[in-house]
Amino acid sequence: MTTDTRSDDRPVGGRRFARVGRVLPVALVQLVGTVVATRLATGAGPGGVDGGPPWTQRLGDGVEPVFLGPLAWVLLVSGIVVLPFRWRWPVVVLALTLGTTIGYALVVSPRGPFVAALTMALANAWFRGHRVPVYVAAAVAQVVLPSADTLTGRAPFPTVTTTTLCLAWLTVTIAVTELVRVRLVRAADARRARLAAEQQRAGAERVRIARELHDSVAHSMSLINLQAGVALHLGAELPEQTRESLLSIRDSSKQALVELRTILGVLRAVDAPSGTSDRAPVAGLDRVPDLVDRARAAGVDVTLHLDGPVDGVAGVVSRNAFRIVQESVTNVMKHAADHRATVVVDVGAEIVDITVTDVPRVSTVTGAPRAAEAHRGHRASSRPARVVGPDTEAAWSTRSSGSSQGNGLVGMHERAAAAGGTLAVGPTPDGGWSVRARLPIGEPARPTIGEQETDG
Image 1 (cartoon, rainbow, N blue to C red):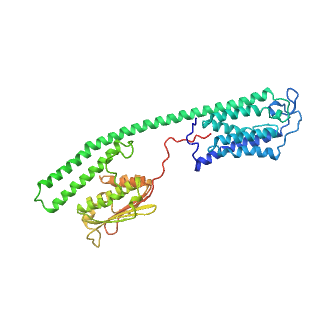
Image 2: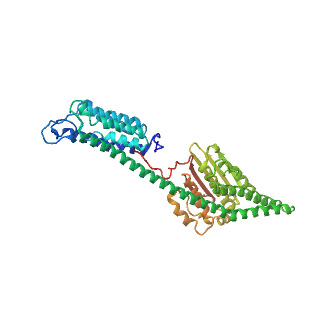
Image 3: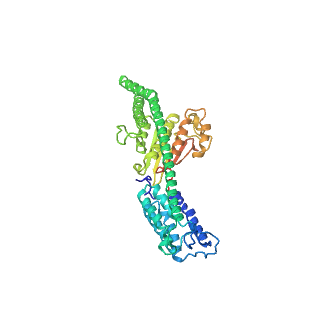
């Protein structure tokens, strides 16, 4: 049984540093503690026998200290060197540390915390669910380590104290590791339960929003579409310009209904399997030409320059880029219908540049016509263009106060920020208005909610 499903995943960045950094205290304990213990003088034990591990000795009887040779140092350090790889090969690291620890005990009369690396390897393997290898390693350590001096002739037989202390060390190591594992599992279960509850509440809120949108906006848009169709059917003798306006209203309301129903479907079935929806996809950059055509049908002089492969832009960037263009063109249709508008979408290798500008068809020496000033309202044309980022969100509430269209500017800012880009808006010297957005291609990776490092 394996309790850590990420045991074979290679850590990166801070996680890798954390896993390697946890070895440093173990290395310090094993090296410094063992060296200090070997330099202590030891004497005859209760049975009058010299040698053996330090826990069977009485200090201060003048016995010479133990000096570590090159082989002992190699074995002592090797058990520490392999520990950083425990996340990749826990059983292999356990076997290597067991071998180096036993080898050290056979080469030198073991004293001090020379089992620190083996302790970490045992805990790591147990934590990751490799129970049988841990039992085997513990059994080998229990048999060999207390009798290392006996096997090498440094002591006639292993003492009860040595055997008991080794058994206690192994039992405490496994018991503490299991306690930590159980606590982490319970904490993970609690996080998953909280996440499930949050997702359930979010789902209920999405359904409520979808119901409200359907009962209000969708119903009103359906009536608009129906009444425009009836007017076209009954008004055969209407002026051509009036019929074109009605056609534009009918087509625009129909397209809005399609997009609204798509959004409602996403809100109601956000967790449905992919490929099960029969709705049209959410609008992206590939729908900008259709948007410009509808604006032209409504009587706005719009020129489109679309450069680069729009199919290479997807997800949040494509959707938000389309909405920024849509809001900018809508503002021209509402407030500057007598202006010439230019939409430029430049798709580069890493950046999508969007520029929507409008200029008066007739300019004057002193500035734009009064009609061009009257339609601004929320734009505050006396202010210079500003670059909008996450730090300037508060400035928009002041700028858009007292105007229903201020929410459109806030929405453009939020969409640019959500895609990790920036937005610049402001008047042009010739009496027009300019909206510029720069959006990086590619969505930033988002950390999994509740993910926690669980390394042994």
